[in-house]
Image (cartoon, rainbow, N blue to C red; front, side, top):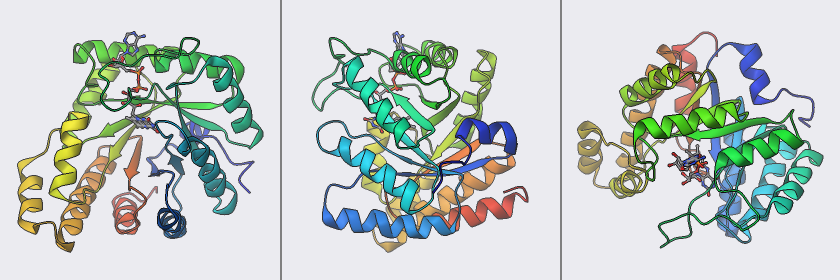
Length: 298
Ligand code: FAD
């Protein structure tokens, strides 16, 4: 259905406005399967520039990433950014996956290293695989130069990085290896994103940086993400969530905060806004409408 639409890199080259995107993850249960499809139906009405589908840490969800990537592309008509990680894969397995993605008509890939398995501190690459996302990017571009390739950026530093400066240098290396755009880890304070964007520019990174925004669902979720991803939580958001006491009101607090972030990001000309919606439709319409009200170009 979407075989002839532009890649994400091409959209950046031609549209000259903030791109809006939404992230899905492959479901593991029947109920999860119903939820992603219902959500995809709602999201379709908002006409995002693209949607992404994450890549599971291992096992069966990897096939599900491909399956749901194809459903989102072929049945729902989205331009899709499938994620791919290096975890547990040899180069020849990665080559096979790339061939499948290409044959299925995908034009974009989000190239990631992936996390070590739960409980392990260090990432151990496959003996015939890749140790860093940069190596995966080089490999993708050598085989499929026309794939539009995204990579991850960390406005609050990747947890394993020795310093922020070093992390930015490795990000620059990913761009030098061929990444066409950067999607950031979620953040809840836009000033952190603007400062990251400035530092990237200072380091010579000239590719679009897409801001990751998560409409938070509860206090517990916020504190888990904050610990896992090294993310600063503004007092106002934490207090608002605490006052909502994990009732339905929490969803509204999270969505309203994300809306403020989105409007401010549009005003500050973020190259893109990527919404981590966790397969839930509840606030997508609210956020996209707010973005469109903030900019006549969208
Ligand atoms: P890299 O870019 O390889 O960086 C990892 C660490 O190594 C950093 O500390 C970096 O500073 C350092 N480094 C980088 N290159 C070098 C080098 N050449 N030499 C020495 N050090 C280096 N995980 C999943 O499993 N599935 C997903 O679908 C997924 N999607 C994501 C989407 C986004 C937008 C983000 C931000 C993260 C996502 N992740 C996903 C999580 C990601 O896999 C982890 O954050 C992982 O720990 C790092 O991946 P990376 O691609 O950033 O790695």
